[in-house]
Image (cartoon, rainbow, N blue to C red; front, top):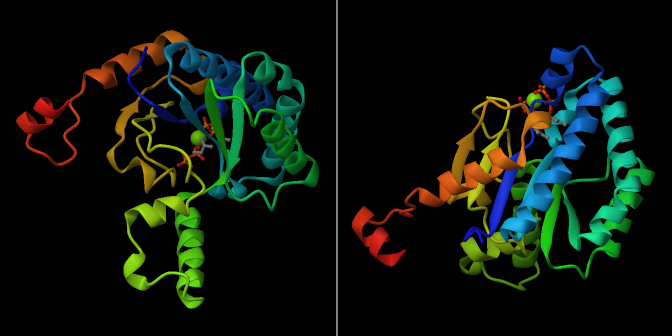
Length: 240
Ligand code: IPE
Ligand code: IPE
Ligand code: MG
């Protein structure tokens, strides 16, 4: 069993995967969806309780209307047809992000899957859809300012914990590991607050090709890294 609680993934490279094979982007999303399912089951087997998957960023709205329409169609199809897997495997599905720009049907599918799986606790898979970390932090600031305005809290009450409690991820532990596929080495506005002490791992593998074996290996590698949290290395080692 892995000692890690929470793994976050930036599932990147679907487009390049499709291009390399001379197939449509939709094919890349389809394969990407299958990979997400395999990795969720692997995480469950490994005892990793929280998996958070970057599915559509707030900035992905900058892509072409055709690309966005295809993505929405594929995600809707996936949610409609994969409910059984979530139910059979006792996977709790969550969705974080600003969903207001998505079609009503997709919003409903997300809500329904959340409701149907709300009592499962084996593994929590959170899909970040329409998610941007800066936007998330801005809404947290607005919520806190409102509470100060109504004198529910004082300015001096605002601390790290209170900020964490007003983020979309308020009931998730911070990620231990943040993996990005496809060779890009950036965070792209993902979990900026939460990943403050996450171990970063970048792999060249395109998301549709990402395998349970590679995932397991990455987790093992990250478990061997010494996490210091600012402490002296020796003190951190003694505390571990
Ligand atoms: C990641 O794949 C999935 C989403 C952004 C939704 P991309 O579509 O970014 O794939 P590349 O980076 O173009 O290969
Ligand atoms: C990040 O990938 C978002 C998701 C994987 C959903 P992008 O492909 O959108 O990131 P950039 O644009 O290369 O930074
Ligand atoms: Mg990309």
